[in-house]
Image 1: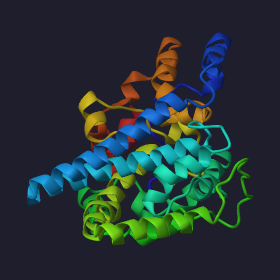
Image 2: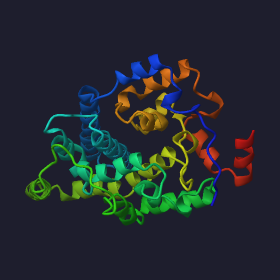
Image 3: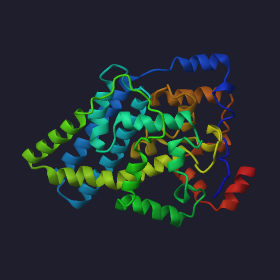
Image 4: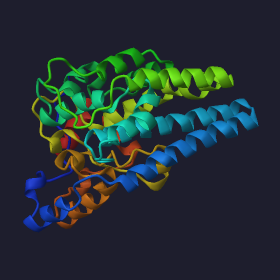
Length: 325
């Protein structure tokens, strides 16, 4: 197991900021329903448009493109559930219900309430023995640097659906963690009624084949690989009690990467942990403030997914020497 810390891209944490900078960022706290609603609506526009276009074209290559596009937006739906877990989408009493109906339930195994139990515990108990994310991702599949072939095999399992059960079980709330009470939880009867309603609509319209091909197939395969990559980019695991700065890469994506694999600024993950009350839409502004304060080690920032992929697949000897220099 490799215990080498990441080369820290951020000097310190939020406490290293000046008082004025912290006060400025404090104005970002709270829900941003406009940005949240836009991303939610755009995700569904892309999904519906891609499926409609593929069915119209009726070719294998169009179906393949549509399946990929749907998978990227399924990932966006999951990220929106994540933001709602922090109440950064909607704070009214219907907030969790709306996000469940249009983002959580469509992913079949995800709810805002269930995800919040796991994720908020991760924030509270970061990289300790009671951090459910840290426990789930402490193992050889999360030990980096890793040989390219070994990483390829893991992604192949994701694409084939072989890792799906493991991923689903890992996202279930742990009974060992105290429950985080939601102020306005979705009534439990809503989910089965929702599922039965969808099943009835699919049966009535004869669209089961479309649903299985363009929704279930990407959800069990390509989406899992995208989620895997997102998790790899969140943190370097197997580092007990590590700080956020020493275990969380800062990855700045190019415009085409954001277009191809939109991740709602999730690659700016250190800032999310420093300021979990700030919406994904404002994390770039937080980054600008840290830069102005001289707290960003630019040589340790990864510019693009490929740069981080190269870092985590180099030999352990090279990775260690890179950190030392």
